[in-house]
Length: 251
Image 1 (cartoon, helix red, strand yellow):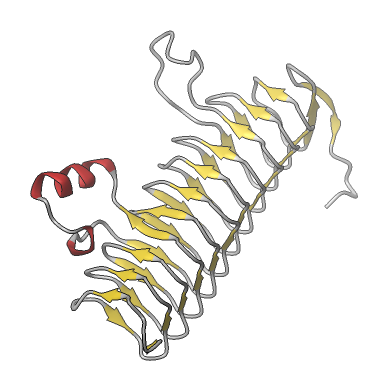
Image 2: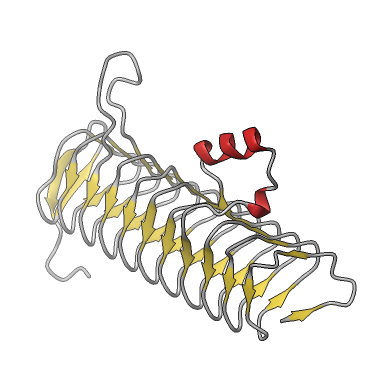
């Protein structure tokens, strides 16, 4: 483990840090954390709980990995324990990932290999993210979400609770998924959309709760999708209406 001489970092005695990992100044590595070979931990990073940071991954400045969930925070406050001593549920970040500065990732999150985030990304608890997925700057994933492989989530995207997103999905800048049909004005079980493989969402599009966008659907910029689509539909407008089928020669 490579440390600067005046490191001012705290590494819990029960943490496991490979000798070929690098930890920069003013970082906190908590109880139960495991950091593999070739990992680079930047200045001011905090890693809590049973976190596994796999080989070749970069964690940018001031990131928080394994942030406690609300129930865990209440326990910490009640017991007056140091957060670094708290063993929260497992969080796993795969090999050769890049987590850029200011990002916060809660406990019970699994991120596959070769993934990357922009700056100031929020990923809440009970989220699973596949391999080679990109999550853009200021994107928010509010937890209990499943995301597939090779997904591109652009700047400012919002994904609420209980969404399912397939493989090779493109979510344009500031596109939004929703999960509350009546905005707390009427009882409604929260349920996010299901986005099947190879769907593309245009910038600033909005997808209503509980609907399914079938494989290969394309949603135009600014569209508001209120109904299920069929495979390879192109939909545009507010409310979104069918325009045509995706041409056969499109990727």
